[in-house]
Image 1 (cartoon, rainbow, N blue to C red):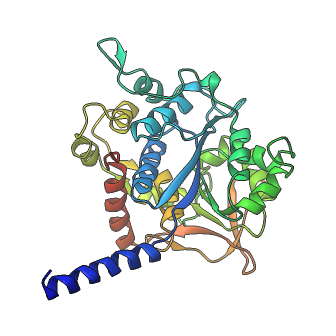
Image 2: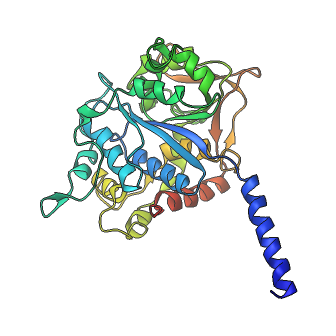
Image 3: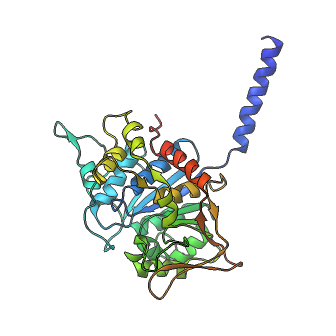
Length: 341
């Protein structure tokens, strides 16, 4: 080997191990979603899979807060499409909504020549365990203060988790498990911009107000909470042009099909849930600003409000015009990223 090439080889070898040693550990993540009520949940799950393929996160479990069998079966289809059918799934019972969404059932049942085009692990939602038991077992198996909980639907499952007693999974109560195992709650809920009209009532709150109230009353004070309000996702659009042009690497794509079934194409859609995922996995990339520290609570009329308190660690996301453009490009790129082979 020539001297110059030898030096280069040593440098590249050193650089490889140096970058490897400096790389952040993958974020351990649980995704709780009301999949089927909007298409942003599907895009958010695609972003998680893209970031797991990049080594930036590890999806520990997916739980659904929408009480409809096709909600969790669609999650099964998406996980299987990205080559991760083994990820535990949990479904809510006696939840806030029961109706089929406009896309989950259609995507799961898509067929060609009489055969389903999408593989999935479970043929029936009845075979999928209860969400709270999945949340408890997932948290119990993880190191202390290691899990990021991303909640992008109703607070039903998380409220029930916090209220759960010790059991055969763990002697700890749900609140104790959260306090010991979770390091961050990243949630899409509420609205905090100055232009918010008095009559506005954000969907993820209003569909299960008692659950949202329970979460913010019982959430352990030492565990940070970062909320992405309605105004953040509304400012950043996932464009129809991305759906039309960036998913053509396969004939049938569960995200593209879901988007097309959700509304008549072409249309742009806010990235509500995707923002909570992006912050949870890449909090230090300056995609968003954050508010002053404070405390969230559900007020007397059932709406989420934030009170500034310097001794608390609950904040909401903010945006600049420059961040809007940057995050739009990042999210469209990640949500359309092909599965790792």
